[in-house]
Amino acid sequence: MSGLRSHPRFVSLEGGEGAGKTTVLRALREALEADGSEVVSTREPGGTPLAEMIRALLLDPAHEPAAAETELLLMFAARAQHVRETIAPALARGAWVISDRFTDSSYAYQGAGRGLDVAAIAELERRYVGIEPALTLLLDLDVGQGRERTRGRDLVPDRIEAERDDFFERVRAGYLERARQAPARFRVIDATRPADVVAADAVRALLAARQAA
Ligand code: Z5A
Image 1 (tube, rainbow, N blue to C red):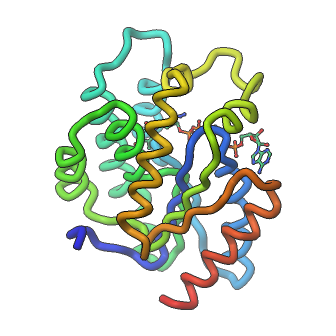
Image 2: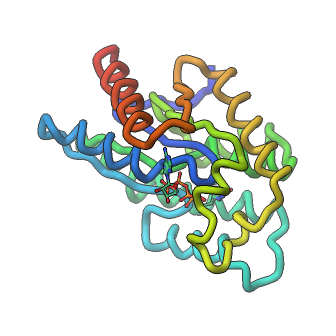
Image 3: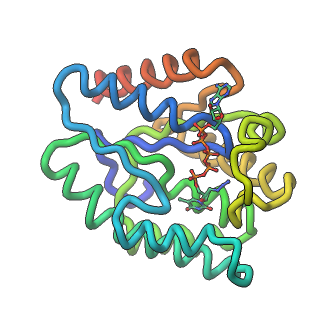
């Protein structure tokens, strides 16, 4: 038992750089809106004006490197605001919420990637987040392929994109371990395939989960 409230209309998308979350998010949104449901699509870090300001701070390569602990706490500061201002109100009025990244990103990037204590992350999650998605779609692909897809997109890589491949290998392994530990919540989707095939798989997983709820 995670001790977190799982909400049936809360879905998150996770994966490394270039996994294709943007295309999948659009397809999920369209599938849910087809029957008239309200859908709030949002992202982390971000999803409220204040949390977007924290995002800008987090990703800006101009200031001195953030300590791993600072990075973790800023991610959770943004998330605490996001949950209270955007996610919880939307769920309370009956909308679906699809979040491009949520707390699993902190376990993968700050836990597995930066080597921070997982128990501390779990404590922040329990105290300041309190909820988890009923369904998490993990778009999995190898690090080199993800990098290839985003090459040339960003003239200046943001602070996290500028990390080395071994960091992203740990992030990927961290995600796969999270999925192994919570098989009822996670669906791992092979994101190496063409975008429309990946999106169709993700929509199928969402509709199946909705039917089972
Ligand atoms: N972060 C963290 O460390 N801790 C936390 O707790 C949280 C976040 C919440 C910002 O996130 C950074 O914050 C992120 C993790 C960290 N850092 N990194 N790296 P973000 O989600 O904004 O950043 P991102 O993951 O780097 O976004 P991205 O690279 O844009 O990924 P994406 O949204 O999954 O990719 P995309 O934009 O959909 O696609 C990228 C390109 O690939 C694009 O040109 C597509 O046309 C192409 N693409 C997509 N799918 C395919 C397929 N199937 N085939 C071929 N080409 C494709």
